[in-house]
Amino acid sequence: MNSDNFTPYKAITFSEPVLERSTSFHHFMDKRRSVREFSDRPIAKEVIDQLILTASSAPSGAHKQPWTFCAVGSPEIKQKIREAAEKEEYENYHGRMSDDWLEDLKQFGTDWHKSFLTTAPWLIVVFKKAYDLVDGEKQKNYYVNESVGLATGFLLAAIHNAGFVSLTHTPSPMNFLQKVLDRPANERPFLLIPVGYPADDAEVPVLERKGLDEMAVFY
Ligand code: IYR
Image 1 (cartoon, rainbow, N blue to C red):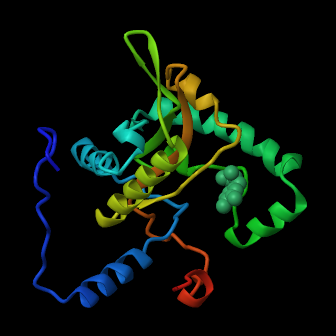
Image 2 (image 1 turned 90 degrees about the vertical axis):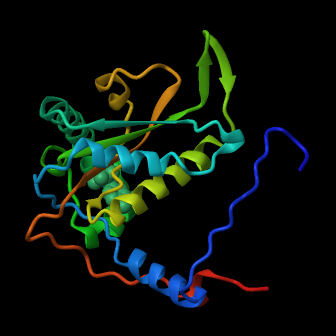
Image 3 (image 1 turned 60 degrees about the vertical axis):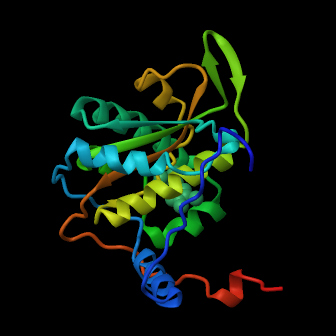
């Protein structure tokens, strides 16, 4: 490339054989689980900063980074979020979700109670930005769902790497988050992620992950 905007890519090398490194990373990531029972043990804001910076290192359409991460540590705001989420979830579990859906969820033991929203020390609310506002002008973003999904994946990996647990929570509808957090019109809630240490007696459902032959095709 012959451009002032480009700089040489510094390749990363490891002394460990690539198969060993890839296998141990797989085993590490395979230990990540969605957890619904959190401890109230605090986590320093400086640590949350690093998790969010990792998330924001994800690739995005035209490098627009079309996301905002709202990290909520305030007990009052967490309480407001819990009340609004439980109100919606009560309706979901009492008529808005199909019988098939409720049946599919049985193995996870979920219901409309969302105590993790006040127990976890932090809630990270991920917002997607369909467009940016630059000097009052709308500037379109590209591949917004793909980009924000990737950043959220990076965030979950960073949370796991720190020894914390998280839950990808999707209260529905979630537009109340825009109001409670006073976000501008170009930001839409994408996911609500409680972050913390697991409760001492936390349990997770027994589940198996698909094997390679069920989800990969080689040509
Ligand atoms: N949002 C609801 C229901 C729910 C839906 C799916 I798909 C899940 O994987 C888990 C829960 C709730 O949070 O309880």
